[in-house]
Image (cartoon, rainbow, N blue to C red; front, side, top):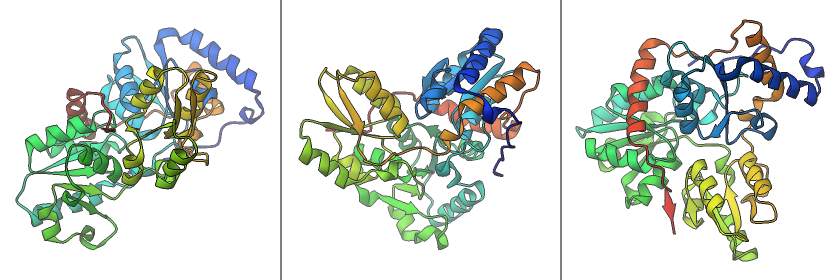
Length: 373
């Protein structure tokens, strides 16, 4: 998929104060009423989240977009693949808008259709086993469509285990894209040893795998990752255990396998929010996920529960951060002037096949942790 570019904002937006932007956004929300829905992902910064009608992970927000019967415009304060999913799951009459077109996802970009099709040919040549392709929802629409055409499905970090169980009931092997860590952590939590997993590198000759390695593997994991969650390390877990033994560690399953093994709990952003919400007063939590969510939870429970980042560094999703109040103000100004800018549209054939994969994901929705101890 070609990378999208975002033109510079018109003059004036850089000079607007926070109060001016806030007043204008709220005025637009009042004017449009139920015709406009603003969605905010958990990793979005607070000065954007404050305007969101709904917050959540990508699955929850796409579902909510599809449920807004009176909405004509959905402004998705997330990243590109999320807006694509919302477009696939909503009616054609609903315009999905991404305030900044450069808000992408480096993990999603690690699985490109031509590379996946080449891998599929190689796998088919190496084994007669039935392979079910599964793509994490953090992927482009054309990868979702590929999985839909080939009898596979999408998954989220909330229902990865349920979808993998479904896939193994359909076939002999699973090709899991694009995040190797979610695939590895989920399969291991299901009781499959690491020896049953092979890593396919699209940049290596033959993916770096021999035909025998392909035949021996039950899970073929695409060599992709989330740059944010790769910032968490086993040493950080050890440091928490040494300096604050009463502190629980909860991480996202996009973290590396050794980190998940050292954590007390691993699960999706929705699961992390739920666990900390339900945790007893006075509990202490080191959280391995994007910093905006961690800081929001820390503020919410200040004085009642301690919530901090597992890492000392600011683990920020830089592409998500490109959605800011200036771009949100601009796209709503344009909308009020009768111009729909930055509309995300998935072409019909891709939309049809991707919807098949997404529907299989929705049929297997079951929010659960990847691993507990």
